[in-house]
Length: 362
Image (cartoon, rainbow, N blue to C red; front, side, top):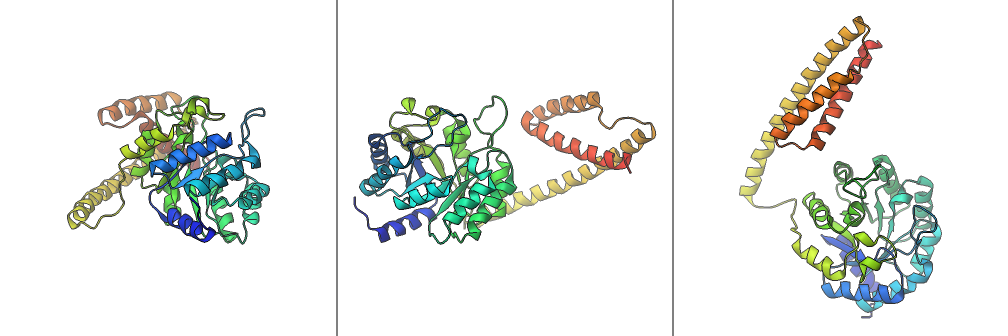
């Protein structure tokens, strides 16, 4: 399938604007045969818009497979010529950018380990100055939205018109359900800050395993994400990197078929009226919650006065444990998750401490 440069640019633009946008391919380009066969199988599903493959892999420790390097770029170019799928790769340096552009890569993305370094993002932005190409930027490894926003702004200031975001979760210490915690409230906040910008989800890196891919993908769709980036491999169990989180192209197609795509807006008057009524109920409950929280802080202020007069420390560990135990029991009866109750009371407790600290040190 031969495609001219001009028609490919038009196709890339069309795909970029498509919702949902589905990007898939191997975590790493390993061999020419592996890249070609994966691309052909993905194209055959008719469900994938762009082909991804890791060419340079920033690994945690030396000695791990760090990507095939520039050698793999001709493989991607050939895969594009045969399947018609636009290609996308991760770049971390100006040299990566130059090499990718030389082999007509259609879309670039900046990885989480690069987003954390403003110098690296600026280097990439400078290398792309004057280049008309879409660029996606992943969230930084740790939950710092200013870093994520800063990366976006650096790209935009370099003149890039098509910038999008990839949510791949955030690193957390210790063993958890996810490889990278989703922390859904953070990409939701990014959607609020950049309402017109493309935001897609990378369930592969959030999960770190195949088991949770479907549920995480569905959760992102329900939160109005604009698409998905999912890793596929013709032989996942023997992949050279991130074997546990990759699926075959056939399994990918099954997953995509099972997803329920929902849309933010509808024109049906009955739906709009019913939703408006429920939202007004939410507004009223929120007002009541804020009023009650204000009253709670006034009581905390009085407790602060008492502690100051009697030279008592702000933090009373036993009392805090009692509050949490009571909240967990009550929350369970009300259908509230332990995780939510913990986050909520942590926030309330911190605000109470801040109130009392001002009083005791005034």
